[in-house]
Amino acid sequence: MNAQKLSKRLETVASFVPTGAVVADIGSDHAYLPCYLVQQGIVSQAVAGEVVKGPYESALRQVRAEGLLDHIQVRLADGLAAIEQDDRVDTVTIAGMGGPLIVSILEKHPEVLTSVTRLILQPNIHAKVIREWALAHGWAVLDEVILEEDDKIYEILVLQKGAMQLTEAEILLGTHLIAQHTAVFVKKWTKEIDNWQRILQDLNRAEATPDIQAKREELQQLIQLVEGVLAK
Image (cartoon, rainbow, N blue to C red; front, side):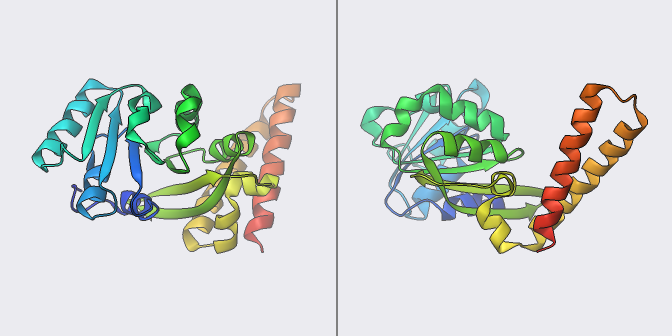
């Protein structure tokens, strides 16, 4: 992967960036995504933010090597603190982290999001917490994609400001992903059910304490919920 040829995962993230947007890529690593967006003519200005010095220096070297220092601001900062008001950022991408970490980044500097109209988020795990955050903070899921690359399954969520209502199944699995019902979606949740059933078998052999019983009931409900969706 490089700035000219992104991974399938990052290429999909890039596909949701509106033409002409001003984008901030938080946790930019080598800044491949913002470099690609500028080189493809999708955006003319971008911010690459990194909280760790090593990746920040890698991003800066990459942007310099691509000759894009006039188009991409590389900043060493904690999450959304990389975005300055004069940047006029309207689109934020955060990819390659766990869902809870992405949510903590969004919650740490909420004032930055007042001028942002689109969030493109790619959690490695626990996409559910992003949907819960969106529900609680006035964001709606515009689109979702699930894909497999190098034997790993990723979800990408595109959020815009607005109200929405989600069922318990939609919070866990994703409204759009349920509707698409792709082979990757079925594969992911079939594996999750298998894992929950293994845990359930272990719990059934354990001492029946109130905590164990509560965990058993929780897993049984999850299995029933997901099996119901997969059966449709």
